[in-house]
Length: 365
Image 1 (cartoon, helix red, strand yellow):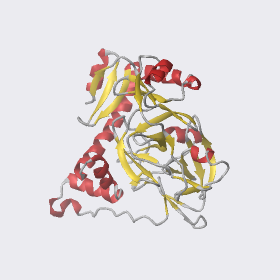
Image 2: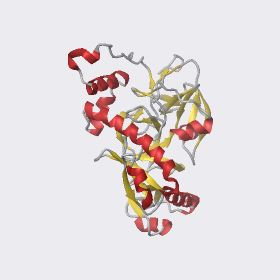
Image 3: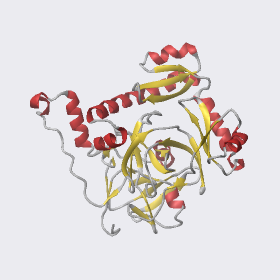
Image 4: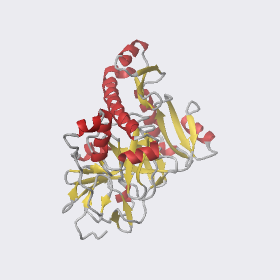
């Protein structure tokens, strides 16, 4: 890409060629050959988000109809989780989306609150620990991070199993338990890495990263894209703020470029956080558009370059150069920007925290 030419920014990748014009459905579509409401919904999704349904079929095994229905179900589950989090207060034990039943599962520590959950149509489950208690344990481990052995790669609260999980390099479980306590579950896996390498998307010196989400005046991306490349400026703007380690976010101020409210081909509608277990997709400059499932939230990850707290795990595929790319639900709710990961996991920094930290306004369509 020639940085002297005007570039067009989507919500996740710097696109050199102009995007296809979005076509609206004809007013007569509803009566054309008796087209069903489901078929019309599928047509509208494809018209507004070209390529989304193909990515969901490839990565999630869902045909167009199933994908359309799942998008509506997950949007409702997100609203329900937010409502119950407030209604249950201290007895809220976390929530996740069950892919098998297509229902939201909500944990409660007080049996008298079960009816509050079931009244919303969600599945209620008695758990031993509240979400606040689990988050408090994560915070305590964060405070002791400097004393953790180098073989410990992170920790998080597992909403599905209602327990604390510590991640560690293969064969080092005992050292992890000695640090965190023997009442935690240890998950052995490969070390996480930062996704940053030379390439094309947006340049920082001889390296590249990916645009996350467009905001008024620019876009948000990963913080390590700034700190790990020294004083170099991105080729399409200037650093307006960044944080790494501790956090992994940044924003770039741009001028002379057209900002579009999209992540890949998906139009951004908002930034409501999806439940654990929900389907989500990512657009990055290396692996393109890939989809998967939201895993544990508020996860601490120890990269060799520094520790980051508050990340969300996914099983979405990503690789070097995808750093900063946007995660979004199929229904258009922005989730966060790629931080790093390994061959099994891709972590993202939640979008809401980035917008709040810098007082940014997300561009939506």
